[in-house]
Amino acid sequence: MGNIHNTFGLNNFKTMKETSKAVEFRNIVNGEVIYLLPNKEMTIVLNPKKVEGNMELKEKSTGLRHSTALREFPKREHTGNGPICYGYAYKFISDDELDIFLSELNNL
Image 1: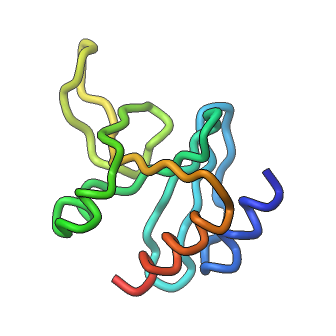
Image 2: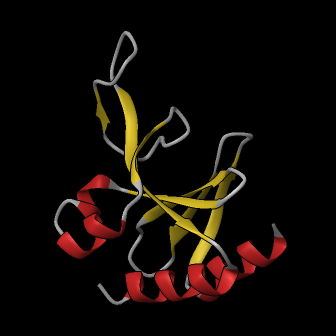
């Protein structure tokens, strides 16, 4: 997990909060929040407000992810009794792939 944290750091993201469900990173330049999920695959989740305004980002997403861990993101109805936070997920095979994505994201 150390290499992943370094990758976020090199792309201007600071670790804000770590739980068993997610690690929250905030961009020190623009304040945007990204979550890293502890899955088998390297998975990050972006704010739907950022993604829904950008067709290229939306097409690259692997789908919506709902979780109480995504505390900084908006809520919507899903399968439970009330609204839950959600965002768009992206999966990566390597730290290099993540680094390229985060670098591109910083330029949007």
